[in-house]
Length: 133
Image (cartoon, rainbow, N blue to C red; front, side, top):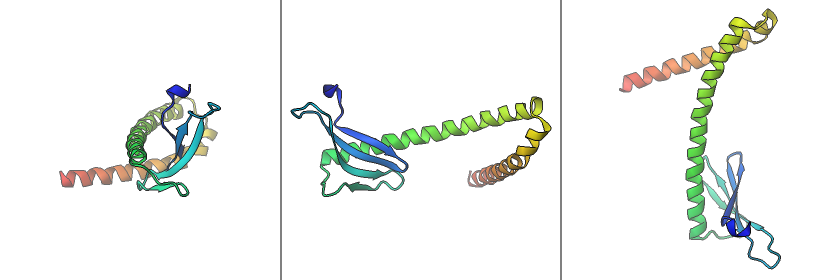
């Protein structure tokens, strides 16, 4: 396994990752993980860990990972939205065919407010796009 290891490991966190340099070339053949930095994906900030100085190779790998992570998160976001559309369709079918009066009473107001908020936002954004285009 040690021969197949990448040079870096990124432990994903809420807003980015902790960055580790991997080393398996020691006498015990154990994988050593040295934390070298913390990355904030939102603002792109990279903070070296402790007294560590990042090399150009470290910085290049962190930049590559940050770009790939942002692309992954953007793709997930669109996929999540498409799932919401599917859930809305399934919720409509449920409300029409299987929901009891008590179940509908429990969720109707929340659904109506969320859908009203979403519709208002979508209509406003579409109008803004039409004005610009």
